[in-house]
Length: 275
Image (cartoon, rainbow, N blue to C red):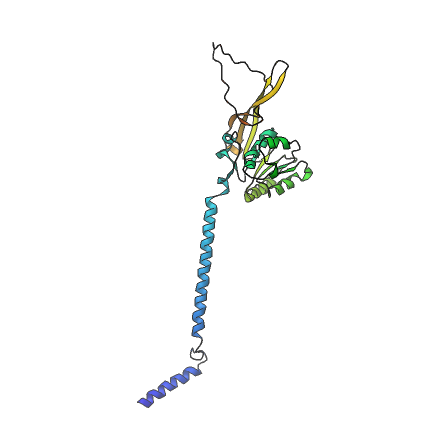
């Protein structure tokens, strides 16, 4: 019986060694197989960690979407802008007033933002400095010629607020590409003139100057009504009375003019009115 068992074990072992596909033929095979499985598991865990990290970054970005981020603006203009700030990626049109457009840049420049002015040769450096714009962070391109749109797009790469005067027709495709660049770079556009699809348009609807008497005197300040309208009814028209500028050259909200009541001996008489 012992011999039979021994022979059986011997035959079994021999048969196993003769089998080309057996594990016993390659006794070191099992260890690398286990190491390979461990490597795959480690790779899967690393990929999961990367996905988790990416999801966290996306969540952070969604928590601070660009449409919730704003650039500061002058206190006098806050009631006219949605959220009281210049929206990152936003486009704004100021059809008439260079001073009003300049005021759009003032607070952001004072806060450290770079500003660029394209195609506005009447943009005065001294006036900009008096308005509080940091000249060391101001880029001026007075005469871009036919390339004004390309220059405006290039300035959007380096400046957070770009003031430009449209010198030609702007097609919707150009507007879309420039808006996408503004959103990507974290900037905003102020057009001195009309701009297709502008988020907000600021217009001086009426104004009057004071300081001139009967043939003599000096202009001291301009009282203006500024009306803000949005595209496609996105923003309800809203108006504000501004001193544009005040006697000291600063743009600020105007104090409401008192109205004389009938029989009041302290009647109010306008100094002078000129449009």
